Amino acid sequence: MNRRFLIKASLLLVALNALPAALHAHQQKAAITRVVFNERTGLLEVMHRFYLHDAEHAMRQLLGSDTDIISDAQTQSKFAAYVQQMFQLKSPSGEAWVLSPVGHEIDGNFFWVYQERALPVDRSEGPIELQVTHNALREVWRDQINTVNIERGRSVTTLTFQGSDEHLTALLD
Image (cartoon, rainbow, N blue to C red; front, side, top):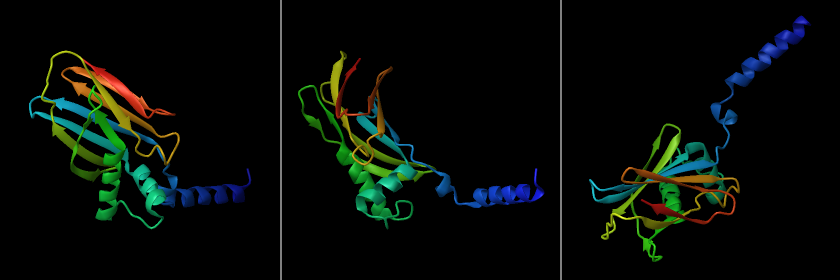
């Protein structure tokens, strides 16, 4: 091969590796939520995990290009409030379970949003039906996938929101 070509190709590779990691990153368009019926604490605990990169891009689309979710506490609070608004649990009778915000944080490459509420008063041992809505980021990207893992006792039920899914129902043991 031509020596000049090899030198140019090597310099190009060095230059590409020096670009900021953000230029190499791409949107994952996937989120995971964990809903735990915690008998020990008497709470229903909800933990949403979004890729920080996705949250940042979504907030720029929703609020404007000058938002900075990494260093701006106000933007972080807005994203947490947005997630809380787009997620809902309903009892078998259709009553919305009000979830209280607990907080949010950035942990490595993830943005976490936390919610909770007291466990339902009727803690029957039998199966219960839970209606779930999780539309966070789904109006931003059509291919966003939100997975919800619901843990009750030793059982885990998984719901996957994708495509036109708006409301899914879990039958919990």
